[in-house]
Length: 404
RNA sequence: GGUGGCGUAGCCAAGUGGUAAGGCACGGGUCUGCAAAACCCUUAUUCAUCGGUUCAAUUCCGAUCGCCACCUCCA
Image (tube, rainbow, N blue to C red):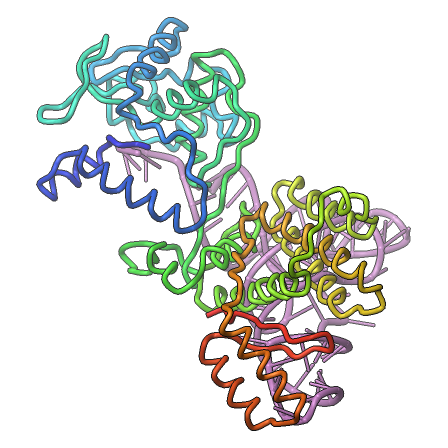
């Protein structure tokens, strides 16, 4: 969490508040939104201002290694002294220099050098450092926090595609410049979400807030929507698209409910499941796994889930299977489907149907048997008003909790 | 201008040197006492455009057009 920077300082001034109050407010709002989207809370959410000592360690090492220097305005990273600079974003130093404006800061050795530590301006929050009072440069907190909690080298670093340059490039440079080791094994840069084909922007007023859409759509639907496009590409937000995904998800949700009711209290154990998974079942699981192994191809993984849903529906109707094997057969499919949905965290929570409703349906079925359709229809309406729809099948009536 | 990415049916969206997954929507039909967001079927001779390589290209190469991001401060 970056809890100190220019924006926060400005916002604090605007609202007649202090940086720490502002930072806390937005951090909490962020964590709330994350939770609403069913995103697991990170084990550690370090704050930049609580990791200042670690920043000093890195800056010291960079100075020792000759890739950082002290200038009038702060401690700077020397881009020219780090041979790999530009390797992440595919930029070349000479091209960048041409693009750079005439240096704003004459004290910098290269216009591309960036601040590791900024000396305090009057009235700004500041921390004591070996080089003078000031505050962290933009990128240093990420290097400090990652090396402290994940080590000098770690596997996956995510972020928006807009951060590739300069932020991640600089972060990589200072981390590797200090440690001498490879910083990150895989970078995952995600594409932007547009609104109705246009970039979100405050000036256009076309931005949406997580807290607003979670009121209308479940976390599962939102997640499925986001995962429906490859993460590197752009994602176009629109209510039409979201509703289309919602309609698709309904099928997954209902299928879970049908499975639940068809299997009932059947008690299966993993051994039976594992010994009965045949090549057809395993094939779907492999498709799913391979899709995700292939640069996190979630659209393909989702397509596999829909294929499994189709298999499940066929299985539900397959009464050629001996009764004693039927539930076992379904349990295997449920096991696979659940596994896939859990990975994407879109598995629905199935709430048992209320006793009252079950009783009503029993009455209704009795009326149907007696061909008293008037009474049956009345009950059906009553049940529908409680939010359930019924599917009459040869083997019984499925009671489906409607998805709003 | 530079660098990178993208352009696939009405919409969303994968994919491969060998002839286009999946979802949504639409249309037609079926089952059911009636119904259903249940079931079945249908929907791109074609993958921005134009060339080239190849026995074969949507997939490789080149050009063109269009869209997006970054390339400046700050984050």
